[in-house]
Length: 323
Ligand SMILES: *Cc1c(COP(=O)(O)O)cnc(C)c1O
Ligand code: SF4
Image (cartoon, rainbow, N blue to C red; front, side, top):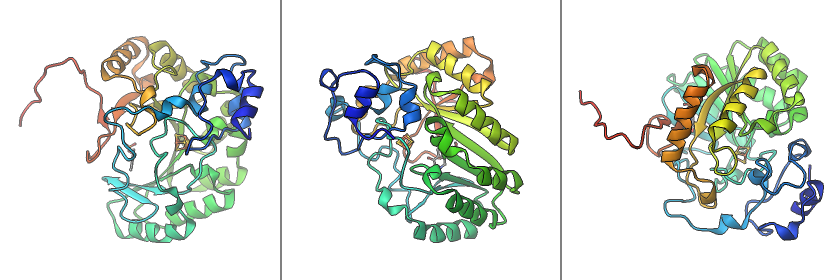
């Protein structure tokens, strides 16, 4: 771990005095050494650096940005379980992350709720609801749990007969692959009756390394499907070339792009927002540049909608067909 912003600046050969840093941010700085290692030295505009450096721009107010834009608090009937969509329920497995991403839509979420003693209630709720066939472990980041705790949780999910799919959402395999390499977990997954999907979270090709490639191969050998989700971020990955390079590198490591999320409008992240018009233009260019299976679905999360909403052409005047 890098301990402080000052230490990070030293590490990447930048002077903290020259950068617009917010040293008192309520969402603390956190980055693993592996991720910091991929930052280009001496470049204040590095796309990885921008994801983690607490900036003064976070204090700027933007219209339409709020602490809980996706309605997670409203959809949270009990601590640790978010059941918004048919067939799948999301279990907040851990309150922690290995990295703090400045754009994160959960930066204001009351994670202290996600304690191990709340799992039992969440699991009982899933056991009683036969419509739930997929359990999503999310957070925070489930990989911040100890290997044994995570395996124990997976066994509890396996014990619910109507659940057939386990999905793990984690950024740890990308930002700290050494930490995500857990032989006993891999073995448990390879032997599990559950279909398992690992959705990693990578925003830029520079985040992918020989170490992440090795780890992904281990997951694939354990019968785990690998998908990626990205957040579209201004100044970081808001071009077709950058996203095309990301898709190709993901594929070279055995990962298919799944979602490219438009930014959730959470307070403190307005400076990362990409306008819909531009997002659509990038999507169109990507479709021309890549085979369909390497084009992520561009989506936005609209509170109250029964799925993540696909981005449509903002220029189109089409009227929705009526029944
Ligand atoms: C995004 C999300 C899911 C998963 O949606 P998919 O479209 O299946 O990937 C499930 N539950 C919640 C609460 C979510 O936010
Ligand atoms: S790892 Fe995911 S949940 Fe954690 S801060 Fe980053 S984006 Fe948010």
